[in-house]
Length: 71
Image 1 (spheres, one colour):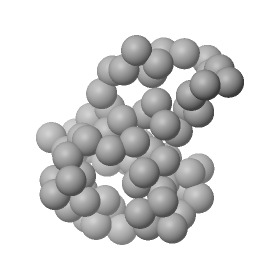
Image 2 (image 1 turned 90 degrees about the horizontal axis):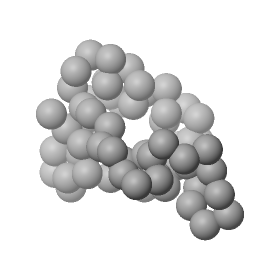
Image 3 (image 1 turned 45 degrees about the vertical axis):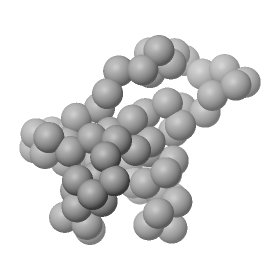
């Protein structure tokens, strides 16, 4: 699954946690763990967005503000 996530990001460019989860029909929490593994290995990186440091609000869900890209 990690390779499939990496290939998706290489093909489609930056995507949010929510988009990746929807693509694989997976729970956000499960996908977040896999993305953290890829990030720790240096295969992907999280992009800074103006909402990425936010603690949450009614307008943006955290999984929509977490954007990842292949390295």
